[in-house]
Length: 200
Image (cartoon, rainbow, N blue to C red; front, side, top):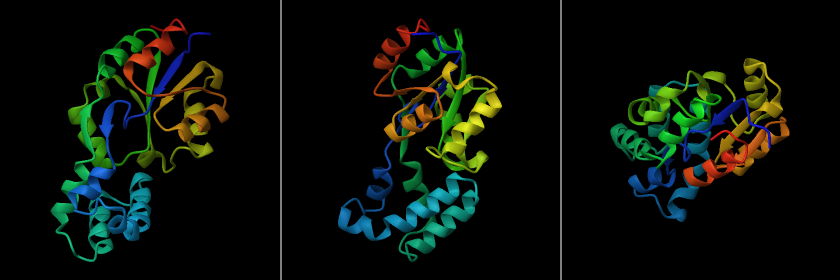
């Protein structure tokens, strides 16, 4: 297998632990029967936020209204913060190794609020000079437009790029765009897969 020229890394559950369920549990809405009536409205608001269509303040103000004033704004902010925790074991070291052998870039569906946390708390973030972020691009994975934006900016053949993501649908989108794709399950397995390409 030919060594890739560029490796594209997702953020949540690749570089940093991400648990969306924590948002609901922090609000006491972890049970499906409590969460489900609100899921569509929260998901819609979050999609607007992650495509950069509303600001951080507008997002949390919107969620206050979605929850009918049941929660103080700060309670919702704290719940949103809880979904990100610690860096994924082994990934800072592996990203640094790969960056010596190939170009690297970040490819993430994220928002200003969570991105700021990751810049502060995830050491591997400092390695990425190229960052393709949904809230800046106005489009999210697995939309074909997301991958085409990356390809236009990189000015490389898709086949020279390796896309690493924990979500199978996102990896499938990258493969449809002509990239190689790896579904992330851990640093050890990723390293083993990349070793087959001669990259590590």
